[in-house]
Each structure stands twice: as C-alpha cells, then as structure tokens.
Length: 171
Ligand SMILES: CC(C)(COP(=O)(O)OP(=O)(O)OC[C@H]1O[C@@H](n2cnc3c(N)ncnc32)[C@H](O)[C@@H]1OP(=O)(O)O)[C@@H](O)C(=O)NCCC(=O)NCCS
Image 1 (tube, rainbow, N blue to C red):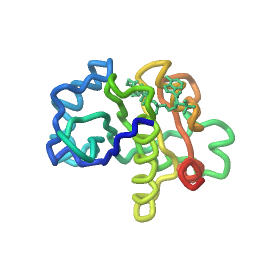
Image 2: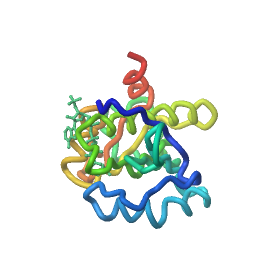
Image 3: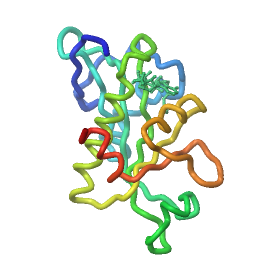
C-alpha cells in the first residue's frame, strides 16, 4: 500500500491524464484519446483513480460496459444450469496503473472498485459474469489471482461469476 489516500472520479471530471503511462501504449492512448468520448456516448464508463489531496493526476483507471458471453467460452461448470443462449455479463474492458505506482496495491483497488460498481449495477440490470480482456500473459496472471478463469478455447479474455467476486470485498 502507498500511504496515499485515493479516490475515483468519472473521466468527465477531467483529471490530469497527460503523464499517464502504464507501459502499454494502447491503454495509455485509450485513456487520453477515447475514454472521455466513449464515456459520454455510453460506450464505456471510465473511472480514474487520483490522489485525494494535491493535483488530480491519474494513477490508474478502469472501463466498464455491459456485454454478453457466449456459452462456448464458459467451462462445463460455469455453463451448468444455464439456458442455451448467451449469458449477460459486465465487461471490464480496461484496467491499468501508472508505472510509478505499479506493485503498490492500486491494481487491486481498481479491480475491487470495478466489482463493486458491477454488483450495484446488477441489482437493477442482470449480469451473471464479469469478463476481462487481458492485454498479455502478465495481466492474465494478475486476474487469475482473483479467481478469473481463462475463456475456453484460448484467448486473452477471462471470466468469473459476479457472485463469487463479491466475496473479495465481503471479507
Ligand atoms: C496488471 C496491473 C493492473 C497490476 O496492477 P498493480 O497495481 O501493479 O498490482 P497490485 O500492486 O495491486 O497487486 C495486487 C496483487 O497482484 C499481484 N500481481 C501484480 N501484478 C501481477 C502479475 N502480473 N501477475 C501476477 N500477480 C500480480 C501482486 O503481487 C499483488 O499481490 P500481493 O498483494 O499478494 O503482493 C498493472 O501492473 C498494470 O497496469 N499493467 C499494465 C497494464 C495492464 O497489463 N493492464 C491489465 C489488463 S488490460
């Protein structure tokens, strides 16, 4: 943990994104060029982690949207007792931490916040699973620590039941 206090703001509050660098240019570019307009257009909600005090410089962000997952990507266990059509899900499309803060617990803070928001959303709009699009092997390993399982058939996406994820912050 960092000793700093953090808070989440929607990207529409215009936090300072200029210096953000998570080491993956696609995720940097998304935050700086597209996240704001996509948030406004209803294509993906982005929340940015900034310090409670001082300049509102982005230390991390996540982007959520509604989605569905086809049964063929689920394991036999995950498919159990489900109808034969795609299952409603929440997509954690992007999650990244600035290099300066990686390894200090912010990835976990971001993931738990994304799960909390999903849990609130599914009280009104049903979704059974959360799916994440990992950009590389390292990111996959990060998500697997929290119970996400790779899609069947091999891809960089992973899936976990929202009911199970809830337990991460219920402890
Ligand atoms: C992957 C990423 C989000 C992790 O965030 P982070 O702030 O560095 O991770 P945290 O400090 O919160 O680590 C939380 C736990 O996960 C572990 N962890 C972190 N990165 C990991 C990895 N790549 N593989 C396995 N475990 C990892 C940490 O050791 C820690 O466990 P501990 O509490 O037992 O020590 C971050 O490194 C990042 O933004 N990377 C570049 C962008 C990216 O790959 N995004 C993800 C998918 S799109």
